Image (cartoon, rainbow, N blue to C red):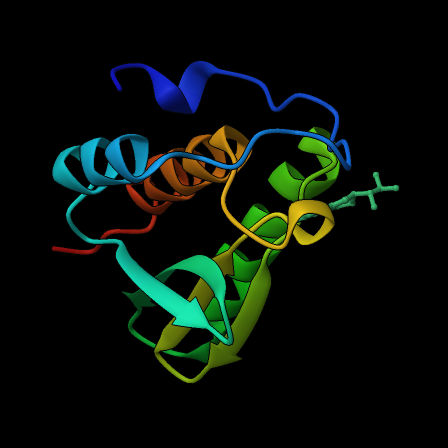
Length: 117
Ligand SMILES: C[C@H](O)[C@H](O)[C@H]1CNC2=NC(N)=NC(=O)C2=N1
């Protein structure tokens, strides 16, 4: 799972294989700040990032948005004063794909630029 943040997403296809339970387990072991959620049968990856204020949360939101646009793979984002909640899943396959692992890793990499402590 090393260098995930350096990888590029593949085009989302309807027949793309979902991530296996072993792949998900291995990802979570390497990226423990992410949690696995089951949303009405759709597996999703979820993390809350903390910030000093709303302006920093918004800047991180925009950074993630730019990465998502670059990669053509997009999260659900909740931006609040001091927090950004990001949820990843692949809409087309209603589940998790390696693209989602890559994007989680890219979010963690982007966050290091904002970490204040
Ligand atoms: C046409 C467009 O590229 C596709 O709809 C992309 C857009 N971003 C996406 N983002 C996510 N998370 N899942 C998708 O299936 C997806 N599909």
